[in-house]
Image (cartoon, rainbow, N blue to C red; front, side, top):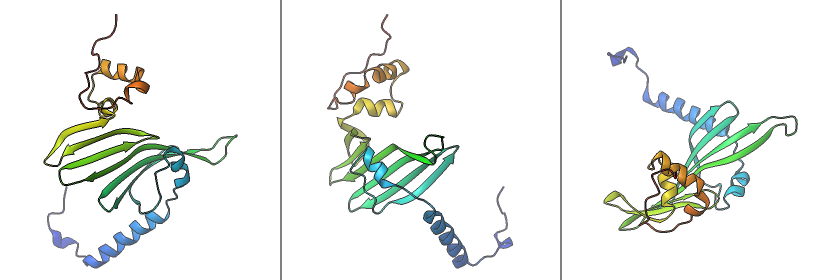
Length: 181
């Protein structure tokens, strides 16, 4: 249900902007992020220039989505802050990395690099054809994470993940699609 007559509520636009600015600013001030804990997971995560774009909270977990643009590189950082309050570690906070991704481009290609504690996947694509992914490393991991494998292939991948995620290249054979008997 929407407002059919927009003259019912007449508010000066500059007041709306001020209210939005104040509420966004105050929301940002209440967020405390310990980047040293994120750097223990991946040392190339720096703390300068991030903008919090989304925050979700449930039970004892807060998930943050941060973005920044640095020269020609767009960065995305999604992590979870787990709040533990136990007898042994009162007030303990643990950080878990969900996504740390960098995107950049040159005249012909766009590039996407996803990191965990190491490189998860790295691919390039033609700027005029974004679906033309050419993997340098991590193709199987990408396919598994983005639900591009069958159930059997996904089971095979996770059973052999340590060796499969290190395979380099783009022209890789399909993973087995039948269970061994």
